[in-house]
Length: 583
Image (cartoon, rainbow, N blue to C red; front, side, top):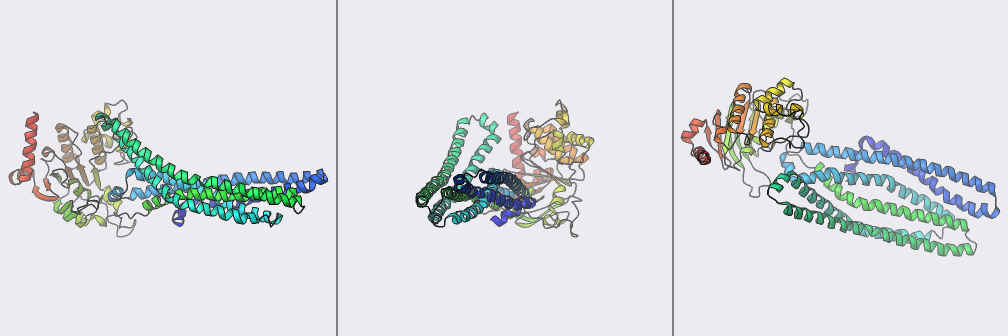
């Protein structure tokens, strides 16, 4: 794990490598002072040699200044290295998530990915900082302090032979259990974030269905679960401190007891005893530093495993074309789409049944293709295979007579415009959202796309027009307005293939008719797929694909289907009866 994560230190490696140098100088300066103090007590004070005391004192002042300077530098450089490591790690995670297919995203919950990008990466960042600060300082201080203590009195140093093994055994006994508890705690954070995210995203639904009490109880359960897991982990971890204090205080008492006898019998100076106590305190403090890092590492191990799970996830939608390679296909030119015996199933489908089976049809460039069928019949799944949001399990999807897997992903998706069922807008202005379709679009092109999508009029009704801030997720516009903005964004892309997945469901029939008319006028060379529930939305299409239970049951234009397709007739009749009933 350490080797895999260490590569993300990257350009901050030089700062991390400088820290041990500053730590070594800091520790050497700090640990030189007790022995100098011992000389003042044992030599300067008994002889009342003021000059000797002042000279040693001056050296101690200089060493103290060096220790302060080195301590400041190693704290600064360790912070730079740690925060840089954290930034690189988050960038790597975000880039990995951006490469995920829909299948990969389905595997991880959104809340879990957010936790891994924030809480887990911060855990590793802080642990790395503690490691280069304390895990370096602790052993260096322990070794140097032991050398000084041993030089003062070898016999008293035997106290450490009992104290240090006792500390190590206590720490190891606790850490093994702590790792598992911290892993549970991180999973509980996922649950808490998931509950909070669902509530905030669906707050309007919560309010409209008066489900405050239910949501409060659900959040309380998640919060209590996290709190219990955190308390369990922390309770186990904090038991290290009392054990360490007990062993440390017992060691100091043993040194005072045996060292006091040595001073009494004249085999050890009083100053030497004071210095020895200082060194043994430094040694035991060093062990405490190391143990603190180990405790933090227990949680970091749990976080590291979760982060590596994301970084090492195999992305199933791979770009098989090397960027810049000679065999790279040109971008989508014509927009012809062909399905050849295509079948697909989700791994999450417990039954293992295909969502779509043996789909075959051809959409020629410039044609408008309607796709109708009942809910859950596989309409959306089918069109998602065109831009490779998923890959076909069997058969092949061709664009311009070439399998979509042979295109560079970016080239393929630049040629395909998609308006999904869940219309997504981002925080920022209307103009900024529209420029997602074409970042180099002129104002005239933006306005034309919005006019085609029947969005220009309501945009200009806002005081700030195209500079209107939409807020997070487009909360400032209605569902129908959001749909039209998403259609305008896709049209501004000037794609060779345009997929509209039930994207006019919140738009009235008259407005929808105007949007369809704009396809013929300004997208005459674009192949358009319209997935719709309403027959009226696809009746003017060149061809209509009728899907039932994941299979194409009929294919033709509206007139042909009304004469020959029983499924199409049933859908049309039921909708007409609904219109008459509502009328």
